[in-house]
Length: 84
Image (tube, one colour):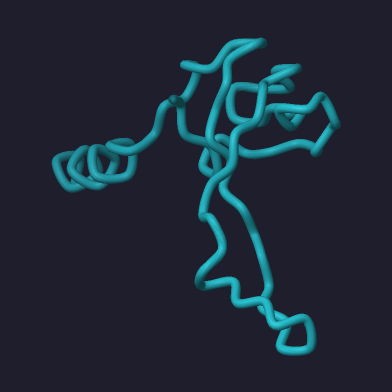
């Protein structure tokens, strides 16, 4: 049973980068767009990531971000962030 737990945790933790971000780091933030036929906007063709700057580390997995122009864009979980 312990071997199965280790195998599952290795698969889960493979893409995690917990603790590797610091204040001031530039990261890629996952975008969450919704398609809108009235505005002729397709989320499928929108960029999947955009640049952001880490401004505060709230916990090991949650960070407060600003966009590259300095506007706050909220708190984001590390699963939605990629380092440059």
